[in-house]
Length: 208
Image (cartoon, rainbow, N blue to C red; front, side, top):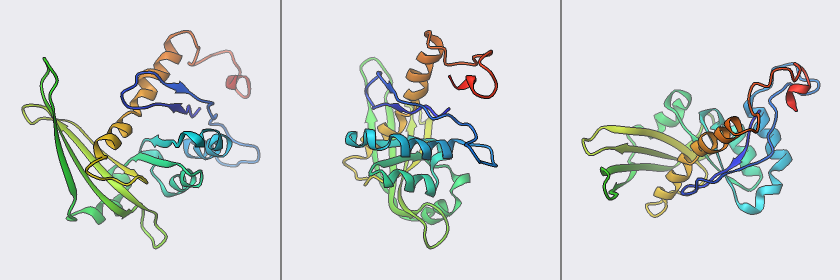
């Protein structure tokens, strides 16, 4: 199933929402997938959460034009993981292009300092073709005191990225891990029985 969850940076509390089962739909000839489940979820529940002005997070599987457009149609924004091997056109476009950049050094009492490097560029094509959706690209690296990179990630977003908000946007993107760490961990290990519930049947009861 696709398990939607409300998360926010700086908060360890999360709110699981209605899931969407990943299962072949009536009349479908092909196996169902996460992307189709996400589109169904947006149709079924997008209006219910619209007043929260959500920004939808997702891994690289979600950073495709059909899903990005489905999110935009609900009036919301998106912030999806973007990898080189899945977005060759986008990375060819930004290769050699001047990128905006901001460096932030974080020092906490009793802990080593971390250096955050943010780079971004606006209005780059998400895919090849004249009807490609333009998105904003954001890259984030984190290095320790010795210069060793401990995190290297990139995202595409519909949100405007500036020097004033880039830190917050990157924190929102990385908050996606709370879905696994706070939501799934709780549901799997604290009596909610989100697991391989053998005995629930192969066709219908497994969805209960």
